[in-house]
Amino acid sequence: MLRIDILDVESAYTSPFRRAAVTVRSRASADASTLVVTSKSTGSIPFAADNPRVEITHLLRAGVTRPHLDRTAGATWLAMVHDSIRALGGVVATSVEEPTVGRNHYRVGVRLRDDMPLRILFNAAAFLVAGAEQQDSLMLDAVFVDVPGGVVYRRAGLRVATAAELNQPLDDRHLRRLTAEERRDVAYHQPSRLGDLLFNWFD
Image 1 (tube, rainbow, N blue to C red):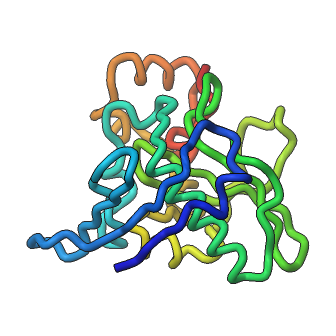
Image 2: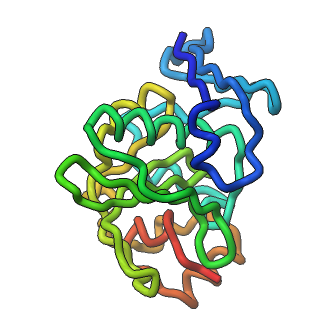
């Protein structure tokens, strides 16, 4: 059993997350990789187990492009950010920004041991983690990078996207399971890559 203590990271989080001791445990099922997150405030929720054999395109479903707040999933992701960056000798450099109009994902700034600034992104609707270069806020298209310390997130049942996956060209097959409203957003904003859809700026 992997216990994730959120108490020491709450001060870095700017949302109304309450202090919660989150436990990640294996669920007895045919799929041994299935995980459940339990929190005192929200109960149990299933997490998307990270399976490298499952293509990232399978995470595309109705609502995945919309801003999605998930207190328990967000707290788990943030705890893993702290654990992974600390293990690499870096620091978490900014407070967390929640999904909102104009950004469908969580993001937080980190600084690695070599002083390289990055952002760690989280799409809570898909339980998907990504990395991106730190850019001016006016820059819409992210420069995706591989997530440092990705194995830490996988242990918590989160899916970690590679830069190569996110840079895949977007085509019509990626849009089939989205809602009509989401497809209209795509037609208007015209994202060119899969990552631009999953970690978007749609308003």
